[in-house]
Length: 112
Image (cartoon, rainbow, N blue to C red):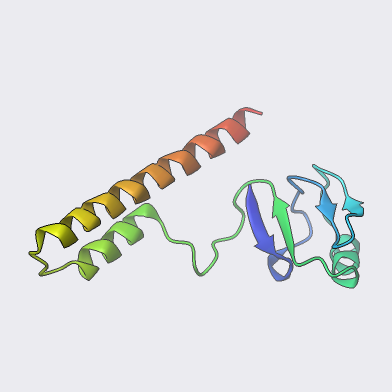
């Protein structure tokens, strides 16, 4: 599943959950293949984000675990302070756990 800004939504994507407007009205059900008409209606009703099945779009702010770890190494390059190195270790552990949870969720979704 991926929560995307409406500008990234394309016909053929499927909704992961109901699409609801700001007033709580259901505009589209779960598992619906989106059309240009759906997307146009969402714009008219002020919908900003939609959660779709899978992970169809690589967003500019999303990075792979490898990219995140490389950046972490670069940020802490030359650091010798033990406290800062402990922060680095904890942050690396957080990134790895986050990545594992994301993979687990994606595997569960494939099974469903």
